[in-house]
View 1 (cartoon, rainbow, N blue to C red):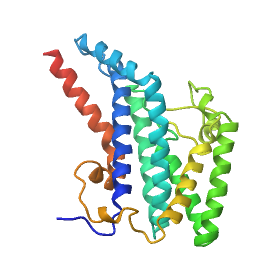
View 2 (view 1 turned 180 degrees about the vertical axis):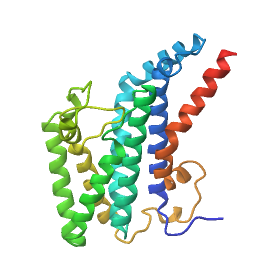
View 3 (view 1 turned 60 degrees about the vertical axis):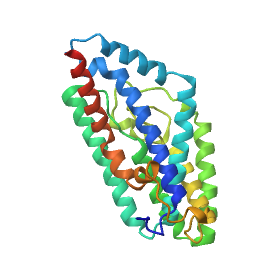
Length: 262
């Protein structure tokens, strides 16, 4: 059975690809923290997994791919905001998911010291970006997209002026540090993407969405209605997968570690 014809094939595909790469990236980090999480495990294989994780996490190619796919993810978020008719619902969904992630990771850190706190991560900046895209939409189709582009480029420039990529890491967080973490002058948490420049990338995505998808149709008509069995389904359920991928990855790692003990 074919997909709904109003689905845009390439956006589902690219969103699914970016999300898959993110899950693999997070799993590499899970391998690094495996000895901490499973300190009671009676196996030396767990340290081998840590070495494998470190060889990936601290490699140059992973560093490059991390930012490439994060940029793609934010551009697609902006395009999604350009295509939606329900900005309020989108903001509520993403914002609620961001709060759930922050609350859950803080609780996990307090109970199990998993070093997994996410204070201002992907969903947090996506929620901010969704609000900014909604504000841009209030200026109309044509003027709004150009305002989004201008503000988006400004946010990116500010981010690089702040040198967010070299921001020092906070060891202990206090609420007085929240805006520094959100804006990009201090790094904190297991997943950190500040407003400058990331929200700017989302706004640029909004401009691209309004420019390339004026008719809300695929740029590749031959793909319209086609079924993608790999990345497409992932892309269509991106919010749910983002919310629950880490517990699933942790469960997989737990099974592997316990099997190696036997």
